[in-house]
Each structure stands twice: as structure tokens, then as C-alpha cells.
Image (tube, rainbow, N blue to C red; front, side, top):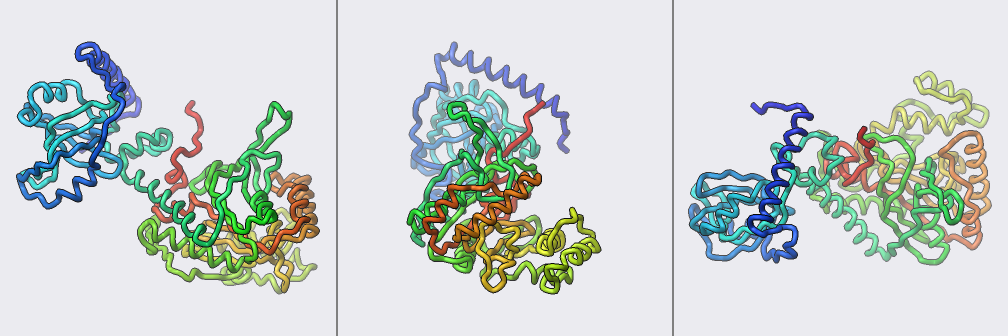
Length: 505
């Protein structure tokens, strides 16, 4: 049974180890004239994975004469007189080392025995062999100290559990938890897969401003800063949408951007103020084309990390196409019995009464279309576990989407939901500058009425539309959330290398 210790006790012990190892470093410099931090380069000829793959055929107590030159971090160390066993880890694998005085020589082994600690970065020369117990190992002939670890590895290095420490000191988390390194490799694979798919479709990757004089493209509260030279407030972007559509006006055809957005909102397992999204805009496409593209991207991402059949927090999710497609009205009708089409212009209060009977909190001004969205949020969203395209969002909540010509109260828009969370948002882009101006004016009235998240009025974007935006389909995908679902990560903080944290008191 492992005895649990108080965090303050652990901190005191770690401080003492730091003091002792710093003293050891100073003595190493003085007594041996050796400074590990000035060792400029170590030519690593072999990874540990190379050894594991190429010498797995060795049988018990068999040694190969091939010289292995590798490097990594010493994770564990067990000394036994004139021999020692250790575990070396590199970026992807770990392997047992065997230090033995006869193989290394008295001087080399003496240096190892006196100066090497767990956590140190080592250059290793030796030969692959399999122990009598059947474990593939390296018989060390030379050990070079490349960097001295002054702080100790976490206890039970293979299982750093304290989430606060993991997020604040991600470097320790990555050392201690190989699964975390694997998560971020999968994240990188998802992003590179997106690029591969989009570039195969002739899409151009671009960059647009992160700092701007307006924060548009979404309904969200921005971060505000001040530009001293210009003497004006500026905003961290909340979305890339309006700049990217300007590029479609500029005849770039198909564009996309992968980058950071910033929203001044709460923090929970699904939200971080700084997050990564991808937005795509295709000229001469509509939301149905973009729906097909979204499905292609998500399926390819699932393939890139291993499987279309995923278990997320104990729940099976299938990423096999086709994904379900249903309108918001249909889904709300299924779950609540509310039929939006039974309510006319004069029936907003009846719609509000229906929602109140269902226990939905309302302000009292909501139209029947806002009631529909609130019923969706309350009763439908959490039920959408399998990938589901939700179509036909009301025009009232879609200021940048093209209206459905058959029913202008709704837009040609969809959201993709997975495990009860929105992962993608897309629509046929509104390209009528007169209609866009009216919708911006409506958003401006909401902002003046106190809605901090209402969309800003962007006069230059209207100006761009007046030059002519071709029929365009647009898409935004939340990369962090998608990565969560494809890597079985409970919190968004688990898939962001350095998530936003409250400063320590």
C-alpha cells in the first residue's frame, strides 16, 4: 500500500532534493571539470523504437554486436553493487538499460554511479541483448550526461495524477504520462489530416489578423486591449469569418485558416478562453456541399487517430458515414412536442407559455423562433450523442447565414453535434449587402439594449459585399472539442498544451 503524503510535505522534500542536486552539480563541475550544460550536441543514431523493432528476435541471454547510439531521460534506477538496471525513455518508447562495471570499465561506471540521477538526460552507447528473464535491454558501454535534472521526477512517474499540476506544469505531465504525449500527437494528426483533405480540394491556407479594430464573425464577448501608438482600443479576434469572406470577394476561390480565437467567457470542461478552430470558405458552394465536406473531414480525422468506432467516457460513438441529418424543428418536435409551424406571428406568447410549462426560463420578449432554440438547448442538445447535423436554424439567431428561400424564417445553416456538444457550424453565406446591413442593424439594437455578445456593425465588411461575394459555403470546426472526442479526453484542458489557469495565490 502506497502512503499518501500531504502536498506541503512533498514540496518540502522536493525543495531538499533540488538543493542536494544543485550541490551535486556544483561538485561535478569542481571535482570533474564536467559541465553537462555545455555539451553542444549528441548525435543520436537510433531511437528506442528502432531497437525494439529491429532486435525483438533476440532470445534469452542473447546479445547482438550492433552498436546502439541513443539518448533519452532516465526514468528509474535500481543499483545493485557493481551493476544497475534503469529505464530510459525517449519521445515515443522506453527500454531497459543494464549498467555493468565489466562492460563499462571502472572509470566510466564510477562516473555513472556517483553523478547520475533519475530524470537526467543521457547519451547512451551499448549493445542490444535480452535478459534471462526475457526483457529486451541495452548493455551500456558508455554513458554521457547531457543535462542534469535538478528537480526530481514525480513519484510513480508513470502516473502523475494531480490535474492542477498537470495543467500548470505540462512539461512534467508530458514526462510522466506517455498517454498525454500520444494525445497531442493525435491532435497534430487531426490538423494535418484537415490540411491534406482541404488541399486535395484545391483550398488555399491563409492567415488573417488576430488583433483588429473590430471583433466580428460571431456572437461573443471579446478581449479588449489598447494600442498606444494609434490611441485606440483593439480586440483579440473571436472568429476569422469576416476576413476570410473578404478573400472570397478578392477571388481567392477556396480558402481556409487554422488558428486561435479568443472569447472572454467562462471556463469549464468544454470552454477555454483561447481555443483553436478551423474555418473554410468555398466559392460557388452551398451548405449542403459543406455538409458533405464536414463529414469527409471528420471521418478522415477519425481514421487518422485509429478508428471510426470510438469510446468516449464509456459511451460508444460511431463516425461511420452517413451522419444523421435533421432540422432543429424536427428534433425539438421529437423531444418536446413543440411544433413551430403551428405558431404564427401573433402566437409568440403562446410559444413562450409552452416553454414555461416545460420549465424553461425566459425573459419574456422571446419570439417563437427564440423559443425553438431554447427548447433545443434544454431538451435536445444533450441527447445528440452520435454525430448529428442539425439543419434549419432560425434567421433570428443566424445574422451571417443566407435565408431559406422557401421559408425565410430559417436559414440554410447547420450545426454538427457530437456527445451533446456543438463541434461545427456552417451555412450558405449571406451575400446580399442590403440584407446584411439590416441584420447588422438588428444586432446593433441588441447590443445597445445590453447584449454584450451581439454582433458588431462592420461597415467595411458591407463595403466588401458591395463588390460582390459569389455564392459561398462556409464552415467552422472546433478542433479542441473534436480532439477531445477522438482521444477520450474528459476536459478541453486535456487537449490544450497550456490551458488558461487562474494564477496561484
